[in-house]
Image 1 (tube, rainbow, N blue to C red):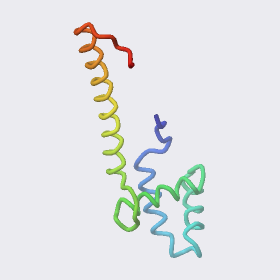
Image 2 (image 1 turned 45 degrees about the vertical axis):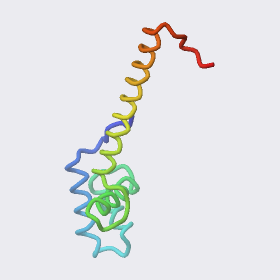
Image 3 (image 1 turned 135 degrees about the vertical axis):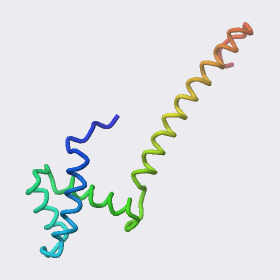
Image 4 (image 1 turned 180 degrees about the horizontal axis):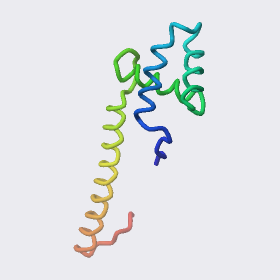
Amino acid sequence: MARPSPYPLELRKRAVRMVAEVRPDYDTERSAMKAVAAKLGIGTTETLRKWVRQDQVDSGNRPGVTSEESAELKRLKKENAELRRANDILKAAALDSTGQSNSAG
């Protein structure tokens, strides 16, 4: 399980907005990100770069899996695992109730 981000959602959104706002003042996007990360106390520029890229995907400006799609996929995988466990339990119970051996072979 992924650990929760030490950065609040509002800080992440603000940082992404700031990069877009100050980008014209810098030669490269990376230098703008570096300045914003330093100003807001974000550990590394790479952290901010990931937030910016994900925001671009979420807004449709960059190809990739959106945050919403990723959350839905995670939910479906969890549900699938739960259903498989329940199915295994039901199969085992059915075998036990008919008196059949539970061994394969």
